[in-house]
Image (cartoon, rainbow, N blue to C red; front, side, top):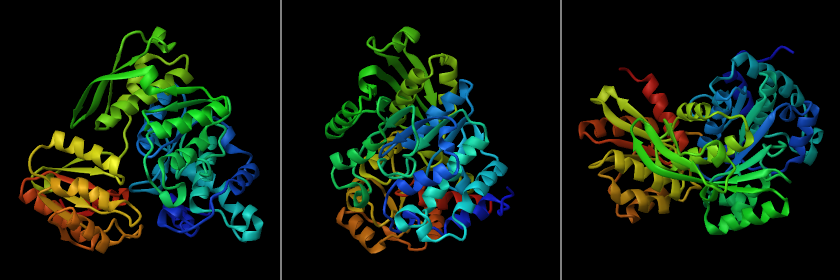
Length: 453
């Protein structure tokens, strides 16, 4: 069927006409509509083996690492992540390259006719499909169209009722849990862990990174009830000799004697990734454990090669701003307290001394707690909005930083704030950390690509 769209940007504009939780629009989370639409499409999500990844932080990085390892070992691997930074099609990719535009448009030509000229009564639950449901369906069809034999699928929100949870995954992977999206997932760690645990499939392995005790207890209980073997980084794989630099992160990763993998890989493996931060060493260990157990023929060189190519923008991404004397700019989409602490740790390690901050966040984030972390540590602070996509409360944000004892300036126009922050940081010879929102990072990159050199 010929696509009605000429480009994926046209398709993206069309999809934005549907309810979008990422923009704060309300919906009822359910899977019956998604399952029905998959059935109408011939269940594209069953055309390849899948690995399903959930968590509060690091899930995009881990998904990318696993996909890169699988691709290096000879599998044509699809990768589904969110959010996107510059272009919507970033969400639907092949592990080592962009998904061809034509394939995404052909996938859309399968999905869009299911919703065109339809009303709420045409779907289970009496509600039209959402933006994320349609994007996910297009990804499933694109991976089938591209001939993928593996796909790594990152959840969007939570897990149990996330649109991606129609996959019959070969394994479930859960990265660290913290308080996030409490209006949807619950306001305690056990409640949020319970939602993430919803991706665990009966009889299939579940892989865990290091977790808070109360989160781990939930995962262990759900896994036991589903007879799902629990595989944990701290017990089966160790991480030592972590090295962090501006080019990335490296670590020695070794398998415990209790793991059968110790027979295949008896010596610790030196692994490196372009992604920066101590958490990335843990992410590499998790990705290696998952890939090596699921792929019995995985070769050491392929695992190392895959990790060495794993990269995502706005995850401690370092830019050298040549327009302003080569000053360093770091983009990190951290928007929770724990992820902010990790970003700050790496930033201060690599760039000791005076430093500048450009910060914005959506109104539902814990900005008061984040301000206590960041406020006292920066010499120049600029507060703004994270673009126009997400709602923000500048007055409340300013109050949070003021209560944290921070000196700041408030520039509501994010484009002006970006220009002022980068100019001032360069004039004062300070590295600049841009954080609080992936949307702010995206706006910074857009400004960098369009401004004059």
